[in-house]
Image (tube, rainbow, N blue to C red; front, side, top):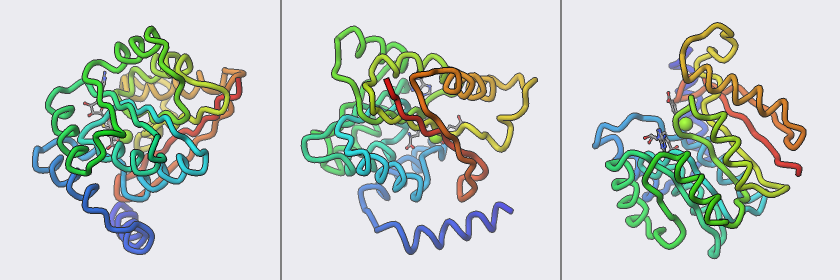
Length: 221
Ligand code: SAH
Ligand code: DHB
Ligand code: MG
């Protein structure tokens, strides 16, 4: 089925997603550096952009920058006085993302923090950083449960939390899985469901990036 999923995604990209040289540049640089092709797809990037604009989010937090592809999508979605803070632990990726964001002329809207996301999140909490309106969790999946707890301390009622890659080729349902990524997303979804402060859903997706899915959460209190 993968070739059919890809062909259909290509039709959607052609008709729905405007050409954007800044996004194309970021992806081509990432692939040239042989970084994993784990950036969101074009339609997923547009979904992030639409969710940010529909929710009128100004302050966006991203966990997992890679080459800055999704950060560029989101920086273009926030208003002129909006901001994206993105966390990346890998120095090489952090530096390439910085260059890609500068190439797009978005350096004033995007702040990249280099270091383990849990530490950067704790620093933001300790500094009393203003809460974020939209949070994209897309770093190392084993830490998703920890990231959720930290992100809730950087949220306000109305904050939207989007969690990437939770279906993992359908392995989410494998309750005896020893895969730390599967264990991480399973616990993350259990935690979402147990919190009275949150309303959440999740959708399974297929496309150019295979079979996966995401969670969408509204912080209520
Ligand atoms: N959001 C990006 C893709 C992120 S891929 C996009 O869609 O364009 C996941 C990224 O998380 C990788 O770049 C990886 O280096 C980073 N990462 C992995 N573990 C991390 C950690 N503990 N802290 C911060 N970033 C981490
Ligand atoms: C993985 C991470 C991602 O952010 C992604 O989009 C796809 C896969 C992973 O860690 O396997
Ligand atoms: Mg992802």
